[in-house]
Image 1 (cartoon, protein in one colour):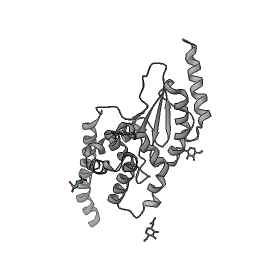
Image 2 (tube, rainbow, N blue to C red):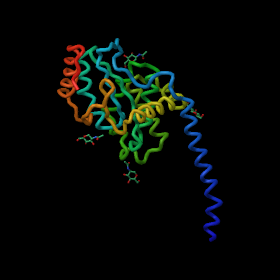
Image 3 (cartoon, rainbow, N blue to C red):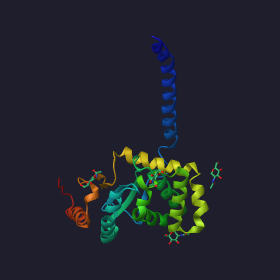
Length: 233
Ligand SMILES: *[C@@H]1O[C@H](CO)[C@@H](O)[C@H](O)[C@H]1NC(C)=O
Ligand SMILES: *[C@@H]1O[C@H](CO)[C@@H](O)[C@H](O)[C@H]1NC(C)=O
Ligand SMILES: *[C@@H]1O[C@H](CO)[C@@H](O)[C@H](O)[C@H]1NC(C)=O
Ligand SMILES: *[C@@H]1O[C@H](CO)[C@@H](O)[C@H](O)[C@H]1NC(C)=O
């Protein structure tokens, strides 16, 4: 009985705190959505027309499957040139401890120099093991941020150290990274890598597509465009 009485007192206040938290989270989101600019990092900006094959890649910079899927996709983009157009969206996976900080570093660097975004993404792919959960188990968040700031300067140059560091103090870069997360999840993406081609999810699990796979997918689409007015479904 005593515990019952205790519960009836605690429960409403716990519930209202919970409701308050939910409301504040929703409220913060509502202020920032839709974002002023669409999410994503465009690889090699060029003209897009109705025949351009639009590829959307959803990546986590510290995910090994994302890392492995990038070289064949990059090769295909170079092979097909202006027939293709790629935008990368980030999905920092919650079970990768440093994914959000790494993704935020990409947004910070993108703000400073858009040409450095893909070099930094590739740098993360190359050395991501340094930021895996097991390797960073004993490191504080402050140490991780410091390591990632230094890591980013390896790409953009040491003169950018303080501006990248203060980027981690700027709530705008936090919000941009949240928008990437929200965008990816709003598209139904729940793992990385995920690829959409002309708006549709590729049937295969993206991490297994090699260059031949990309070439055949894109060749088929370009071939189908040749026969105007016919639909292959
Ligand atoms: C921007 O980044 C690119 C690629 O890393 C580099 O070549 C260029 O010099 C950078 N520009 C500035 C202003 O730092
Ligand atoms: C983390 O600390 C524990 C306890 O000191 C140690 O046994 C372990 O090897 C450390 N792990 C790493 C990755 O440094
Ligand atoms: C970040 O913000 C904290 C608290 O406002 C401040 O003490 C610190 O100096 C700032 N760091 C940078 C690099 O701007
Ligand atoms: C994709 O397939 C690979 C190999 O079959 C597997 O290791 C990986 O977990 C899969 N990823 C997802 C997101 O299903």
